Length: 222
Length: 79
Image 1 (cartoon, each protein chain N blue to C red):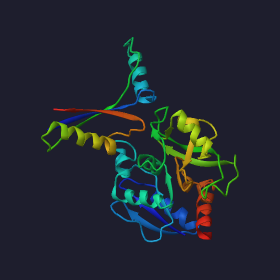
Image 2: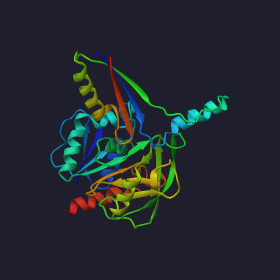
Image 3: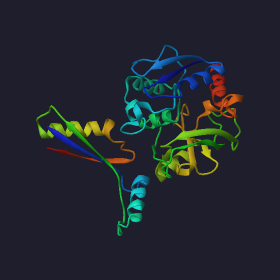
Image 4: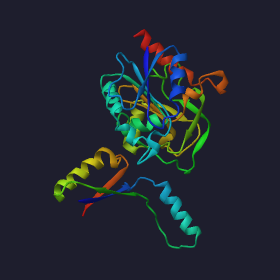
């Protein structure tokens, strides 16, 4: 399985994401935001957390319009897998690969702590290694994680079983306590919590590891 | 030709920052502030000289980058 991890100016979780993919058994290429193409044969693109372009204009907005993002949208259009974490999730909503928007946390504070997540669906390569309803301990670190969708879209996401993770208790005001959502084809996942920071014993939790292991397993078998 | 873009959260989208400003104004003794909405103003200096062409060009910029039309609306002034 071949993963590509993108670095934008201001990305700061790119190395952690590379390590998480590598420890799960993936071959990883690192890609710069000005690149116009992904390396040949990439199965999954990882868009890391951080503060791409200093969060100027809106979080993720400028990254979503950078040269590599056009290649990521094309990759997703071909049925390729994409995992966007934190700022990566913001980038994915800005590219419209995922619905909704991430607004300022309802309490207006930057939130940096480990939260309890609930696995809402196991029907994806990202979550197939978990049990529905399983609780995970994964850190969040964001100022704009308040996932906002209208009532119609929320109903659609529920009907289509596209909510991947929920916060077990309210964290940032997000609609339906949504922490992560899947695309219609279930191959693009955006989530605010950082599974790459809950992937090794030294992190204090290894609950996020299965996302990477699941992806490598699904894409290596295929 | 100059253009000025106002970007605001759409009506119905809760604005936590506006709400915090409203609360702070109340604390400072400014009574009767029923609501505050916070947005942004973006000024552009354009090479285009035709107002209608400039307006169309700026609208495309708003749709592509300057506003997130999922949650924001925009208005364009040309001067």
